[in-house]
Amino acid sequence: MSSQRDLFEIPDDVCYLNCAYISPLLKSTVMAGTQGLERKSRPWEIRPTDFFSTAKEVRKLAAGLFGATPDDIAIVPSASYGLATAARNLPVKSGQHIVVLAEQYPSNFYIWERVAQESGATIRTVPRPLDGDWTSKILEALDANTAIAALPQCHWSDGTLVNLKLVRQRLDVLGGALVLDLTQSLGAMTFDLDQVRPDFAVAAAYKWLLGPYSTGLLYVDPRHHRGEPLELPIFSRENAEVFSDIRYRTEFAHGACRYDVGEVANFALLPALLSALTQISKWGVATVEAALAQRTERIAHGADLLGLDVTDSRYRAPHFVGIRFPGGPRPALAEQLRAENVYVGLRGDALRVTPHLYNTEQDLTRFSEVLRDSL
Image (cartoon, rainbow, N blue to C red):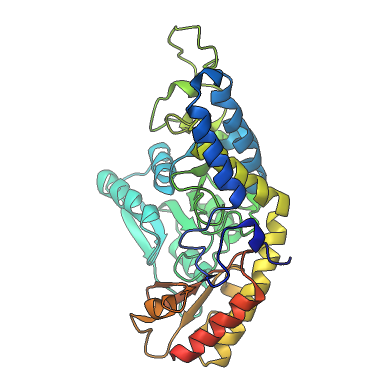
């Protein structure tokens, strides 16, 4: 796929290779959010059905990304909100353990730390593998006392992969639950729901889903559709769209919408999210994945020629490159690149380089040149 830069408002002199930090918004997404705010300025034009219609379309497009049905999707404001929802609905007993990765993103650690403290369980941390093969180490960490494996599809700091299919197969034997934070992969990597079958899977939308901040998507397996939500919003109730009926409703509407955040109809953020998901669906995630893999392969090859360490492509997500330096990176390296209008991230000991479709051939060449000159 050729560069899609014209769909974004990115100046020619900006080399932005930091989508894993926060994505730029599409021009169409900004317009959708602006139009949503303007609509709120004319509330007499807003009808009760309008509080539900955009959410319905978001669920439909989100279901396509997960490989699920719209009934399996809740709309949440963050990954931490979705993970807290999962924690509320999965049993953990004293003596059991919750498996996480070393240096896992804090949103997918803090909630399990609290669950362990309150239940008498323990956190079992999988150490970072030297060769990038997380999966083998995870499988070694799982046993009959595993209550939950709380994992990403790829590690946020350098894109190293987890084979979630193999993890799910092992958990099926052991009886453990699987909770996923897909914030760093949904929208940029295909996801095989039939093979992975998570209990819950959440993705904040402001990275690879190209959406606005404070929006996210939560997949809920049907066996958890009748669980306990964090909130009790009125729009999750049966027949909530009938505003003229002021009786209290005891029944939730069908599906995972009971887990929605309150005021889910947000007239600025939800139209913007819908716009972003529409564009990703138009491209197709498999097409995005293949295009980003070409970009990252070129970046990785350039780093290798400079004598830098890049994770073997077998263990690296197609949209990530984690570059490591002999003796470790200089703390000021990312800022040095920033001074050249080249934007990447430094996470732990890895220089995290994460392109998207807005990047051009000139961007990739420029990054390699600036990186070479910084050494």
